[in-house]
Amino acid sequence: MKPRPFDYARPDTVDEALALLAEYGDDARILAGGQSLIPMLNLRLIDAKVLIDISRLAALDAISDHGDMIEVGAAVTQNKLMAWPGLDDKLPLVAAALPYVGHFQTRNRGTVCGSIAHADPSSELPLALAVLGGEVVLRSKQRGERILAAQAFQKDMLTTAREPDELVAAVRFPVLAGQGVAFREVARRHGDFAIIAIAAVFRNQELHLGAGGLSGRPQVLRVPAEDYPHLLANDVVRFVEGLEGYDDLHASAAMRRDLFRNLASGVVGEAMRCAA
Amino acid sequence: MRRVNRSERVRVALTLNGRRLAAEAEPRMLLSDFLRQSLGATGTHVGCEHGICGACTVLIDGVAQRACLTLAVQAEGRDVRTVESLAAADGALNPLQAAFRNNHALQCGFCTPGILMSFTDLLARNPHPSEGEIREVLSGHLCRCTGYANIVAAIKEAANGTAGAAPNPSP
Ligand code: FES
Ligand code: FES
Image 1 (tube, chains in turn yellow, blue):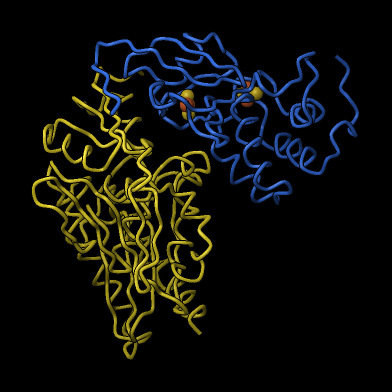
Image 2 (image 1 turned 135 degrees about the vertical axis):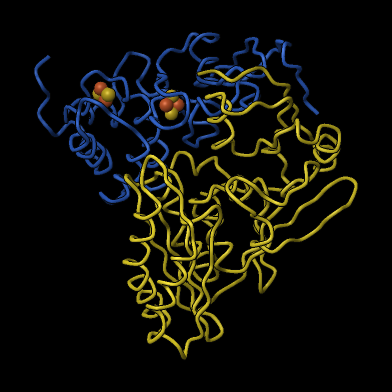
């Protein structure tokens, strides 16, 4: 399929991009990697009046180490982050999640921020950002910069707190050196969207257990370490029961909950072993 | 800033397989169509047009990507390489292509150009990939006739530099 017509703009600076967003608002779409946007345009699931191509903006193509946070700019591709030398040490959960994101060929172009801005409820990077308690940096021409916690940013399926004139300029992953993490997902084929995804992190005497694919956005359960493993099974059951899930072609909501209930303890165990 | 209106056709210049070429495109034209229809390079195939099948995979600045998920205007000024760049001028196959031939790694060949370009990228980054790494990259392609075992064998042979060692199938 071919997309319906749209205007194309390739700004030379971030300010030009923000000016275009201020002018067009909801009629504009940011084109970064295009690995979610262009399929939707090609299939005519969505329309855009203008595409604002930020993929060549060098100012957005940076991974910066702020000590306790790693900031990833809006033009950084998933494979660029995967090849970043500090990844395994500083962001082990992201390192574990990235191989599940699409395929080699789509990661070569798809961006980290684009995946988070797209806010698919089963995608891996929004889940990793939520479980780590990361942040999203939004910029607009009128109001400058604001920072939102991951959980405040993603509101529901494909829905975020981004205002129409705002650009997701960067995301910030908290550094998690030397702590236990694990990531697993269930999909029909490698590289497909997850039916469910599970992420576990031990941090500050707490277990953070994240669920993707069980509601409109990633959900995080926190269990104090002294309660683990005694209370965990009950906590997981209660947690999962509280999530409505959703039915689609790949799985029913009930199947998603069952998968999570059955796999969560294994993922937690793996995270504990790597913390030890 | 580059701005193109929806109905405007602009000249898009890029380097295709080492040659500077240009043709007109409107914003919504996909790179896959631009290569095939405007530049006449029909080696790149088009299957699904939404990023799933991998048939359209090309190298842009040396990196394997989906041409169907790239606008022609986005490739402006870029270095694009397609399957046409692989064989020598006299038609001699390069080692990766020869390994595909030796291992019967294609039947209809529809998926092959994309697979060859993906592994041109992978082998440049990682000349000796493990079978797991080969399969991971191959998972970004669909082949409906050959079966993947022979494709994996061909890539291993190319990576081990043993292309030509296997007996050539009779023509
Ligand atoms: S045609 Fe591009 S991935 Fe199928
Ligand atoms: S050889 Fe026919 S689709 Fe792969």
